[in-house]
Structure formats: C-alpha cells, structure tokens
Image (cartoon, rainbow, N blue to C red; front, side, top):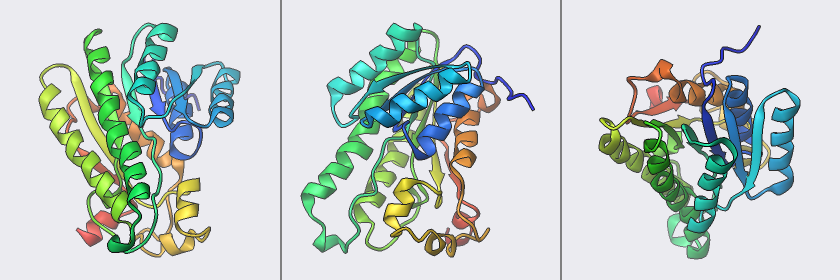
Length: 254
C-alpha cells in the first residue's frame, strides 16, 4: 500500500534522529513526502538513516547536532534552510534516560546533563524553529515528552523532571503562537522498544510491559505515526496537547 503523502513538500527536522523513535520518525516523515534534516550527535547512525531515506527515493541530510549547545541548534536550523529553503515541521526528540537513583543520591552533574539535553535542548530548539517557521507562514512542532512527563516513577527524578518541563513549555509556546500559524504539541510515549528503554530496564523489556494495560510495549513506528499526524494538516485544530501514546497507562494511573 502506498504511504499517504500527508507531508508532501514539507521540510522537517528530527533531533535524536539516528535511532529508536527518532529514526522511525525520519523514515515516516520522508515516506509522507517531507525532506528531513536528521540531527544527532551519532554521526555514523545519522548518516546511515539519511542514506536509508535517500535509497528509498526520499530527501534527507544528516547534520551533527548537540542540542544542548545553542550554536549547534542554530546550525541545525540553518541546515534546513540552506539545504531545502524553509522549515515547516520539527520533532524535538533528542534525549537520554539519565541516572536511576533516589533523589538525594543523584549526582548533580548527571542531572544537569539530562536537563541540558531534554529541557534546554527542546527550549532552544523551539526558540529557533518558531521564527524560521513564521518566515514562511507557520508550521508544526512536536516535542518529546513522556508518560513520566504526565505522571512519575521512583528513582527517575531527573528524567521525570525534564519531561514535565517539556510538557509545560509545550503548552506555553502553543498558547503564544496559536493565532500565528505555528501549532505546538507533544507526544507522551509509554514504554517503547528503543535502545533507551533497554538501557533503562537492564535489557528486560518485559518489566516495562507489565505496567501497560495492553500488556505489551510499543514499537517506535507507533509513535512516529502519531508525530507525523500531529505535524500534518489532519491535525490542523490540535495545539497545546500532550498526547499519551502509552497502551492505556495514563487511563489507569491518572
């Protein structure tokens, strides 16, 4: 079946695009007709994803990007403009799991690193993405929150704090630009089979699936579908929403 080209002629950015949900979103955006900047610190992985898109007949360029560095974020936006002439959509996905320990035992250097990537990285990305989108009439941004950006889990204080911050900044920015043509939402995945999940659950994903009412973990493609829907005109009246994609977890835990 031919993929619906709901993002035809759009230009997008996916940070953390070399693996997991980011990789799946790059491939989905490209299949739906978008040209995509694959942004990541993993050069080999990012180049491989861009090459995969190109081999399938799509358009993608890799850009080395550390989203905790404001100058690197500016280069990422500039790469979209120089390679494809505009910016229409973005998925601010780059993240790490942080360290798992009770809050008083957390090392502040590790906490700050998590905040630099998942709070400052998303914040600074939106600071540059929104003006670029306004230049050509608007666009759509999706931020990577988490089920733990709506709820909480013991020993994940740095990750949970960061994802709650993402949920908050998403809503604020959405209100600021709701009447100006830029829609801003977030996805809040539950457990998804990615390298991050495997590290966080010590390579035992069954432990994560036990918490999911559907009794399975998600696949990266299932999140990518939702991200691309939020980026498309099919979601034209949706902004300021933190969308759980979690197999029913948020219905059970609140």
